[in-house]
Image (cartoon, rainbow, N blue to C red; front, side):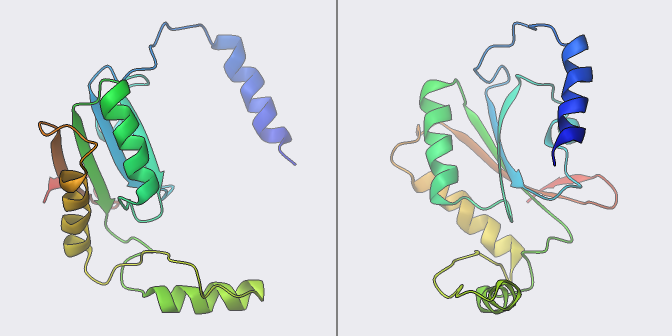
Length: 161
C-alpha cells in the first residue's frame, strides 16, 4: 500500500548524508501553516531543513496542540519568532463547523456532532484571534516576535496582515 513511498525513500537514502542539522531552529523561527498540499513552507519562506519548526493543521489554526508545540519550541528549541501563515482559497474558510459536521457525518455514516473543525467565516478576524492566543499564552516568552501572513496560492505572494 505504501510501496511507492518506501521506494522513494530508498532513492533518498542513497543520497542522504547526516547533514549535522541540529534539532533546534537555526533561524529561531516557527511557522504555523495549513495542511494544504499547495503550500511548501520551506520554499515559500526561503528556508532549508533545520531553519524552522513547522507546525501544520487544517486552516493554520493556533489550536491547543499548536500552542503546545510552540511552547516547547520557544522554551527548549531556540524559537524566538513565530509566523502564522494562512492562505487564499482555503477549504476551512467560508464554511461553518455545522456544515462540516453534517458533510463528514453523512459521508462516514457517523456522529460528528462533538467535533470542532474550527472553520472560519472571516479569515482575517480568525488570524487576529489566533495571534492573540499566542500573545496571551503565559508559557511563551514575552519577547517572542509574532506575525500573521496570508499566502496567495495562485501567485506565491506572501503578505503581512
